[in-house]
Amino acid sequence: MHELKEQDALKENVLELKGEMSLLNVLLLRTTELAAIEKTLTEKLEKAGQLLNRSPIIVDCSTVVDQLAELDFAGLKQTLTQLGLVPVGLRQVPENLEEQVQQSGWAILRGGKAIAQVPVETEAAPQITPQSDSEPMPSRLMLLERPVRSGQQVYFPHGDIVVMQQTSAGSELLAGGSVHVYGTLRGRVLAGIQGDTMARIFCQRLEAELIAIAGRYKLLDELDASLKGQAVMVYLDDDKLKIVPI
Amino acid sequence: MSRIVVVTSGKGGVGKTTTSAAFATGLAQKGFKTAVIDFDVGLRNLDLIMGCERRVVYDLINVISGEANIHQALIKDKRVENLFILPASQTRDKDALTQEGVEAVINSLKEDGFDFIVCDSPAGIERGAALAMYFADDAIIVTNPEVSSVRDSDRILGLLQSRTRKAERGEQVREHLLITRYSPNRVASGDMLAMEDILEILAVPLIGVIPESGSVLQASNSGVPVIMDKNSTAGQAYDDFVKRFLGETVPHRFLEVEKKGFFKRLFGG
Image 1: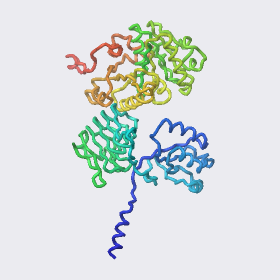
Image 2: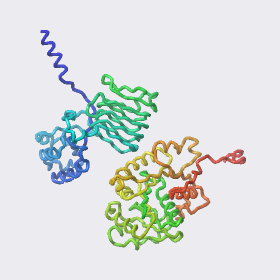
Image 3: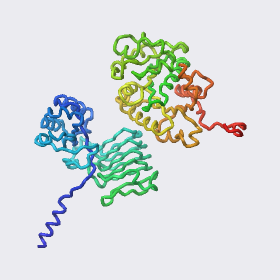
Image 4: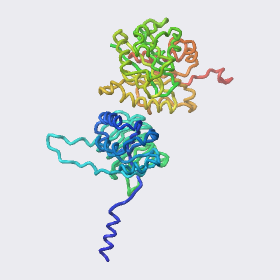
């Protein structure tokens, strides 16, 4: 009896189902020709370098709805996988094609710009593999010495982002680890984007539009007015965002 | 060695073309051989402000598509020595611009020994604006003292750091902030952003502040770049700005509210 209870308790801990804001790249199709998609995407990925490697991706069909029946869904999935992406699902699929899409192994996502709850094929956090002496460990720090401007997005899933100056309204910092801003923080900032709940955000002056750690977020409007313009630290305390002056 | 300067802002109607005309005229007045190119294909304006709209035969797109050579298209200014205008096409759109074409035009201007090539960017961040800034060595970012203009300038600064040839080579485009339509009275009353606030948000070196002035509109309508109006505050401020661009140290003017005289105070004014 006692044993059984323990097992039950254990079972409770095996998993937790949560709705969370995840960051995903979206591939907006403008054609249904697989060869053209592959060619263009290969070029784009080459430019992006390691940025998009192994990153989950959603395919948006809204602009090709009319010709969507012509798309080889299974082929598209295969192409994306071969290019090193992790296909998550299709969105904006018309009802009559849903069955066909599902049979080809795709998930169908409901529409909307910011998809909130999607079955993400989560990756294990990047392992630190022992390196030989000749190969130095890749840096876990991204240092930015110039202001981060409106419309710029800095994505660094492998560690911390340090900005020596300000960030502007309309900019976005996305870090796997923590974020430090030695100036005014005005844009959006998301730390611990791969789920690191220990990640923290530090800034000299808080004017941010949105702050998030490991998917828990707060908007500027929700911030305590007394904290605005202050030097603060943001951290997760028992699943809640805490902002304290420093 | 030619220096390529883009005049850009993101937002429309802030004074890019007025600035391009004044700037190019100012450089030429100081003895530099200067060409100013209108990149606003489809919405040709620079020729009006420069007062040469009746002399346009060939334009930038004709040169890019090989229908004319650069010497046929360049319009020599009648008032100022060393000043040449390359107008945009009014009948085409920005898709007619190609990177190779723009590069060829700029290269032929360089070969012709131009000291400065001023690129008057269209509003927006699309093809026309992107190509106007791509080859730039310097950028004049034109901003009005209001939040949306400042935000758009910030966006443009980001693009200058990533979508230019200099950026691709790991170098930096020199950035200069020019605040236009500045009205100290309206700053004092809180209607407009103060210069200090704009500088704090954008964090870019300031090269000039042009006061709001009726003479700008008047100059545009009569096709005379406002810098030639030595009596207007805007004309003088543009002249200061050109001097600063050329390395002189000139104090900023027209930043304070004008003191009202006794009679104005007495009777209102």
